[in-house]
Length: 168
Ligand SMILES: CC(C)(COP(=O)(O)OP(=O)(O)OC[C@H]1O[C@@H](n2cnc3c(N)ncnc32)[C@H](O)[C@@H]1OP(=O)(O)O)[C@@H](O)C(=O)NCCC(=O)NCCS
Image (cartoon, rainbow, N blue to C red; front, side, top):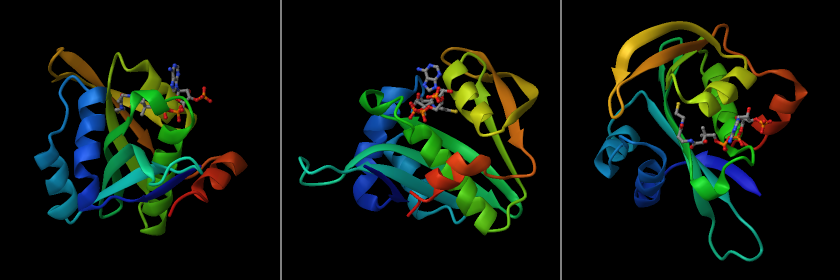
C-alpha cells in the first residue's frame, strides 16, 4: 500500500539517493534540505510503501512543488527505479494538484526534458498540455525543455478523485 505524506528531515538521505538514481544532474541532499526547511513556497511529499513484511515504511518516491500565489510549479518528481510503473508518480502529482487546488491555485506549470517521453506521458494523462519550448535549458546532456501547463488546475475524472484519497 502506498501513502503520500509530507517529507521530514529524516527522509533527506533517501530522497538524495532517489535523486541520484533518477537524474543525470541530481539535486543534492543540501538542495533538498533547502526546499524542505528553508523555502516557504516549497512543499515536499513522499510516497511511502508499507506491507506486513516491512517493519518500517519505505520511501519510494517524492515530489517537490512550489505554490506561489495562484500558481503550482512542479519542481521535481522521482520514483526509485524498482518501484516505477505502479502508479506512484501519478499519485504524487495528483496529491500536489489536490493540495494546490485546496490552496486556491488556478494553474499548474512545469518543464520536462524533451526526451523524457515517460514524464511527458504521465503529465499528459493528468491533462497537462505543451505550450512552448525553452531552448537548451538542460545540461548533461544539453537539451530543450518542453513547457507544460494545466490551466485551469483540476483533477480528472473518478479515477483521479480516488487516487487523491491516498493523500495524507
Ligand atoms: C517519471 C516517473 C516519476 C514516473 O513514475 P512512475 O511511478 O513509474 O509512473 P506511473 O506508474 O504513475 O505511470 C503513470 C503514467 O506515466 C507513463 N509511464 C510511466 N512509465 C512508463 C514507461 N516505462 N513507458 C511509457 N510510459 C510510462 C504512462 O502513461 C503511465 O500510465 P499507465 O501506467 O496507465 O500507462 C519515473 O519514471 C521517474 O522517476 N523517472 C526519472 C525521473 C524523472 O524523469 N522525473 C520527471 C521529471 S519532470
